[in-house]
Structure formats: structure tokens, C-alpha cells
Image (cartoon, rainbow, N blue to C red; front, side):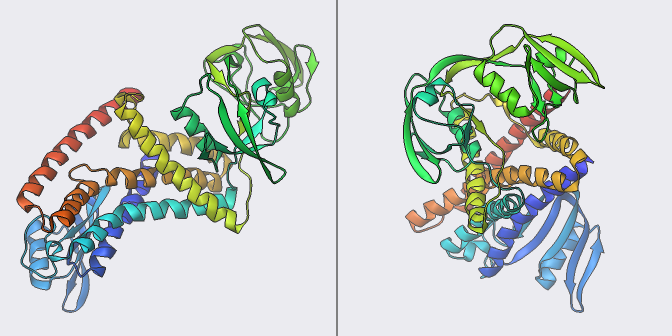
Length: 449
């Protein structure tokens, strides 16, 4: 099932990408020789004849050439390997003396054709974001669990962060990404936040803290039931399980989730043992749990409640655009961190790793029904689609961005670069990409197995 879902997602993303090239090529009068889904040998093709279109199975390269030569119509094909796709245009990689050839069109027309693929990926990401935000809402950067530094700066629970050091924040994830790329230090942080519809500013002086965790998730709603316990964390090691109901923490009774949160807000965890009383099948038990040190560093003294909230029609559009912007910025920042060695090459994931992630998403969301599965996979598809758009715009030979570099050079030179030389550059780039793909696949396999 994981592989089938992954193939469907990959196919949609790539078909949309190639459809962008196809539609702009047609609008510019460029002859598209073939529009295909998949890679490898053709297993089914639709060919135009004098009597209309007809299907042909296992069309050979010779048959394909004949169809193009005699009928001069686009061949629509489904190929054997259900990964990838293509929009092949006359004169795309060679000098062809035909007014319908790609190489004979104006430079701006060719630029529009090349740009259309990535742009269509961004449009698809926006459509998916509109669906998700319309159904589930968006995640404001809502402040919770205010501690000393933030409290001294005047922040309160429920405030919504809208700027940090001049950077606009629409989503909680944008704040998380900013802090990931720009880790806190002893330097003060300037915040803008909204409270009761009014904007306020604050300057927070981060403090150095140690972060301890027990390793469990709260149940949905406001009960004290445990939704799940995390492997290699103290709660699981102490024997607590999903469904256990917490009744006391160090002798203090708790009746709802807010009581637990308030307890730890007033009694921050350290390395000292915590006695947790819970019921399982009506029987009361007590476990001694030693919090795990999960990190240490500077903190502004608050947490962010990343739960989604509903919004109106204008908000759906606004925050859907913010969703796509966040993913694009996330991809670009990740590439910057890779280039500066803040992220290791071993952290890269390719198709195998993505299939594994899709499987995990499906497994985690399946118990909650089809709608949850769809929305979870759609959310991941936003990341994939925007990522595909960004990667294709990089100035790398053999990708759309590499072609754009040569077209931009042509704009300034007033004449195109020699196609043979350009072809050699793209071939070298393609070989380099294949080597990178092998490396990434090896990484994926080593992580999984």
C-alpha cells in the first residue's frame, strides 16, 4: 500500500509539472512530440490517425518516430516505470529548421515554457493548502506556558506572535523554522504579538536552561489519559502505557490535561524523580519516573501551542499562501544549511526515504479514517510539490533552472549559446545528478535497514 500511494503522489506531482511545460509549449506554438507518464518503454500510447485517435500497445522507437514524422501530432504515452514523466518538444535539444521548434521561438516564450513546470508545482501546493486550511484551519504562533523571561517582558498565555526580530510570522511552524535557522543566544529578541486584537511589542532576554521530558503524548480533549508513550523515554521505561489515566503527580491530584500542564508550569522538571500515580483497568498504580535531559540552551520562556484554528474565507487564502511560502523558505533554508555543513549530506532523503515517510504517515493517520489520511498525505504533498518546484529552479545543468541560466545568458548576449556546448553541459549535469541519486538511495537504504 505504501508503494502504491507513493507512486500515485509522485505521478500527480510530476504530471502537473510536465503539464505546465506542455500547456505553455502549446500556447507558444511549439510542437510537442510526446507527453508521457512514467519512464522506460511505452506500454500504451494514444496516436492520432486520419480517422481520429487510437490506442497502440508497446509502441517501438521506430513506430514513435514514424508517428511524429508522418502525422506531426503529439503522442500521449504511459510508460513501464511509474515514476517520472516527460514533455518532449521539437528542437528542445537540437537545432531544428522548423518554425514550430522550441529553438525557433523567442527567448521569452522559451523562458515561459521552462518556468511553467515549477510554477505549476507551486500552484498545486497552493490548491492543496487551500483544501487543508479550509478544512482544518491554520496554526497561529500562540504563546503558552509563559515562564520568567517572557513574563518579565510582559507576555501572557494566549498572546499570538506576529514578528520576531522583524521577521513576519503567520504560522507557528514559521517561528519554529526561524529559531532552528537562527538559534537563540544571550542576545535579546524583539517580538511583536497580538493580544485582544491589539499589537504590542516586547524585548525578551533569553535565559540558559536545561530541557527535561517524560516522553508521552496527551490524549485528545482535556482528559489526563495518555495518548501514547515514546520509545527510549522514561515514561515507557517506567511501565506506563497508552490509555493509562494520570491521577496524581508527586501527590498533587490532577483531573484534566490543563492540571498536568499547570503543575509542570509551576514545578519545572529537573533530574529529580517524579512519582506519577495512574489507573489502568480500574487499578491504581504509582511509578517513579526520572525525567530525561533532551537538550539545553537558551529559552525565551514560553512554548507555542501549534494546534490549528479555523478561519474565514479571506483567512483561508492568506494562510494557504503562508503555508506554501513556509515550505518554499524551509526548502531554501535547508539547502543553505546543507551548503554550510549545518546539515549533513547523510541527512538527505530520496525516493526510498520518501516512500518510507509516506508509509509512516499512512500508518499513523489510518486509524482516524479516510479524511485524516487524505489531509495528512495532502500536507506532505505540499512539501513535495513545493520542493520539486524549488529544486527545478536551481541553476543546475539538466534541470529547468540550468536551462533558464542559458536562456538568461541569451537575453543579455542577444543570441543563443551554441546548442552543442549547452547539450554537453546538461549531459555532465545529468550524470552528476545520477551519481547524487545513487548516493541518496544508499543513504535511504542504510537508514531503513
